[in-house]
Length: 122
Image (tube, rainbow, N blue to C red):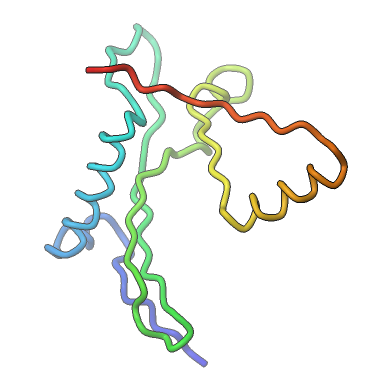
């Protein structure tokens, strides 16, 4: 079976569509609301790690569009271990992974830790 993916291949193609601009704007709103990053002035000699848009259309079992997502992600492949590798890493766990890990930790009486970012009040 051939599934035709109906999403833009590049950012340039995505910004030609009003729909995808709206999807990307929603993602930016979530990023700002969650205080995912803060803008700073870079120190002299520091090269920032770039970002790119990952754009996908998710289909359900009937091959109908379930949702269309745009995620802004860092170009982690540009990082160098020991220099800037740990500075922007943001792990994300899928719910299925959490459903597997938590019962396993309970079965073996392991401790579970969670780092939590508390947003400063504005």
